[in-house]
Image (cartoon, rainbow over all chains, first blue to last red):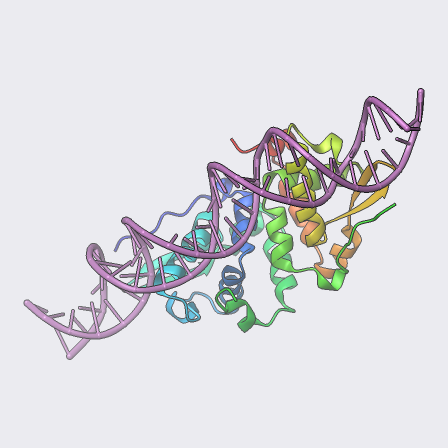
Length: 112
Length: 112
DNA sequence: TCAATAGTTCGATTATAGTCGAACTATACA
DNA sequence: TGTATAGTTCGACTATAATCGAACTATTGA
């Protein structure tokens, strides 16, 4: 049961985290995980092909925002919220709070 | 004395703000302005040509992070911190706080 | 009115990032 | 031992963004 590499919290880079959160679809994923955790990739695809979804999850993983555990055929994703909070206090919370005005579905759409 | 267009606070877009802050040089500008405010562009160039500097200030202005007032030949920049705080509470503060570990000079370098 | 200063705009170039189909891997389960 | 399911990897293409020199605009102050 091969698992993923995840950067340790002290290797998180602020600009990488901000960049990862600056994409509407990735923000949708993060918001969805904040509500239901953990979740596999499939229900979060929002109409994208699997290859695009996979790419965005990789960006989130490399930035340290998401942890992915392989459980059978499913890859279960959860937020590394405690580690992010320790490293960048208040950052994720303020982003999630700021996103609350935006309809969740609107975020999910592929580029218009 | 021609002035700039600045978006109203309720038109700020979260992803645009995050994208603007996700660039090392722009983060350097924002951190510098947080320390000394207002400042013209010139002392913040950090070795870049004027055209690059101008481009980055435009991104910051369009996102609503920076306000630029034309005063004589100088363009005085300041953070729209109160408006950002009202629109996205805690966001700018947590980014500035998170950036404190990073040496300010390191941010300023053009891409390595 | 002329030079100097501060910054913008333009256009070209390059680099980075997103998108997608197709082939591939790994697990589960019949 | 198939076959279905979940997700990755690869490679090509496209879109977006950064970079920079050169020409331009606006203001100041001699």
